[in-house]
Length: 231
Ligand code: 5RP
Image (cartoon, rainbow, N blue to C red; front, side, top):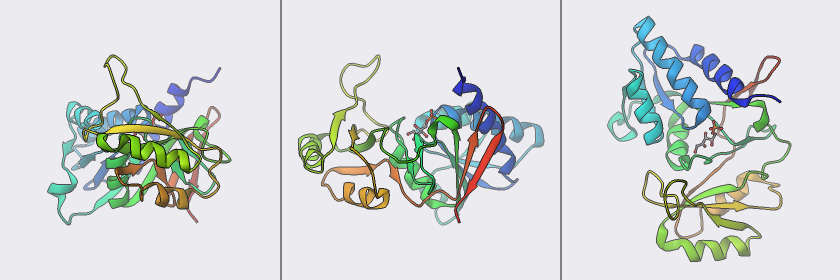
């Protein structure tokens, strides 16, 4: 049995090597980027790097602070560009299209990842798929839109489920105060079209399909580490 956590640590540690002194770095969310942020903090401390991190969630903000990474936000950065964003994913296909949002952070992740000059995804090998869609697509929605969005998703052939909290009664409430509808589609033949269509539903803040955004995917495997670049 492969321990995915070992692979997450392996790839998170590896990604730290591509960050250069003086860069503004988008900090993704999740258990893989946890390792990236942790080891980036070690590099910042040991090599006295001048790095500014732009977190994509309270989770990455709190961890980055703990490990001594200076923090900024998209608002405070103004027109200073993010040099590189490093983030995890729930599924990756051979086109480097992604499903994200397993941690309900995909709205800010999409903003930060889209704002970066380079967007690098780090995953363990279990995330690589032939076709996206086994993992339900998370949609962040305004709470008042729950019924309308559910109906529209069902009309589109989706099976939406309101994500429920763990050790918290009722639904998950995102960092932005919204709900998450995890939506299973039978098959996702065209991720870019689905991404656009989902965002046209009134009340949808953002969906977890990231089509055509990743520049590079680094995959932690038992045997080695493999890298895929957008052509
Ligand atoms: C959070 C995300 C994560 O990047 C994604 O869920 C992968 O998480 P993990 O590294 O824990 O497997 O999109 O919203």
